[in-house]
Length: 389
Ligand SMILES: CC(C)(COP(=O)(O)OP(=O)(O)OC[C@H]1O[C@@H](n2cnc3c(N)ncnc32)[C@H](O)[C@@H]1OP(=O)(O)O)[C@@H](O)C(=O)NCCC(=O)NCCS
Image 1 (spheres, rainbow, N blue to C red):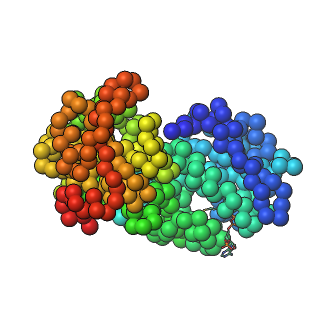
Image 2: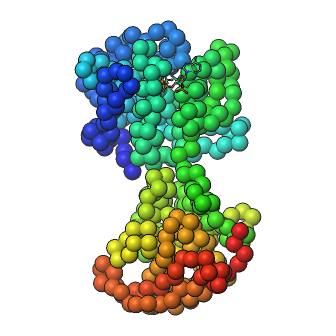
C-alpha cells in the first residue's frame, strides 16, 4: 500500500499523461512544493460559480501556499492537471484519507457504515475553460487507481455535491458513483451524498465474490476481520499469514493486501469462512492463481479454521465452495499442498475429492504432499459435501 510520504518522495509513481479530445495533452500528477505560484493562479482564475461548487479556504497565494505546505503532512493527497505546452495548472483533484463525524453520521442515516481505514473522500475542480470537455472523465481511472493504491475500497464525495450542479452529478454518475441521500447545507441549499464502491461486482458466469452452501459462506477477507482472526488464531495457523505470528499490525497489513488483491482482481483471492446467521468468522481460505510450481489452469487452495470450528466438516464445505468459485474464474485444476505432518488437512483434501499425487519440495525445501482435483462438474457433484446453491 502506498503512503502519502512515498508519493511525495516519488511523484512520478502517480504521473500520467492524458490526451483530451481536441486539445493539448495534460499531465496528471501529485501537487509538489514547486507548484505554489501556479496553483495560486489556478485558484484565482476560478469563476464565482466554480467557487460555489468547490469551496476552498481562499483563492489566493496564501491558500496555495497552505495546500503545498500540507503535502504529506496530514491526511490529504492533491493531484494537479497540468497543461503540457503552457505548464498551466488546469485542475486540482483532492483526496482526504480522513472522514468527519458529520460524514459518518449522514451515511449512517442512509444505512451505510463508513470505515476510516478503507473509505476516502474525493473532490475535483477543473479550470472553467476545462469543464465539460471530458477531461474529468479521462482522469478518472487514475483517481480510482490512486484510491486503491492507498488501500481504499470506497470513495465518497468530499462535502457532497450541490443539487444545483447537474454537470458534476452527471460526471459522478457516469463514473460509477451512486446517490446515497440528500442533506441541507448551512446556507439552506440542498446537496447530495454519492459513493463509489471499488470492490469488484459479481463477475461473469455467476462468479459472485460470495459463495454459500447455506451453512458456510465465503466472502472476501476484510481488515474489519482482524479482531475475530486474532481471537481465533492458534499456533497452527500463524504460519499461514505473511505478517508474522499473530501481531495486529502484521495481520492488518496482510488483510489489506488481500483487499487490494480483490480490488485489483489480483491472483490472490482470500475469503473469510463465515458460519451461521451472524456470519461468524470461523477461519480463512484462499486461492492463488499464480504460484511457483503451478501449471497453467491450476489454482492453489490453502485453508485454516480456528480451533473452536474444527471437526465439523466446515473446511470440507469451504473447499467445495472455493472450488466452485475457482471453476467460475476459469481454473481447471485445484491443488492443495499438505504438510505430511498434518493429517487433518490431508483428510479435508481427501473428503473434498482430491487425490494425492506427489511429494514436492517448495522453495525453501519443505516437502509437501500435492493433492489435486480436476475442476469439472462431475467431480464437483460426486464429492459434494452439502447443497451448494
Ligand atoms: C465536476 C467536474 C470535475 C467534472 O469534470 P468534467 O471534465 O467537466 O466532466 P466530463 O466532461 O467528463 O463529464 C460531464 C458530464 O456532464 C454532462 N453535462 C455537462 N453539463 C451538464 C448540465 N448542465 N446538465 C447535465 N449534464 C451536464 C456532460 O455532457 C458530461 O456527460 P456525458 O459525457 O454523458 O455527455 C468539472 O466540471 C468541474 O470542475 N466543475 C466545477 C467544480 C465542481 O463542480 N466540482 C465538483 C464539486 S462536488
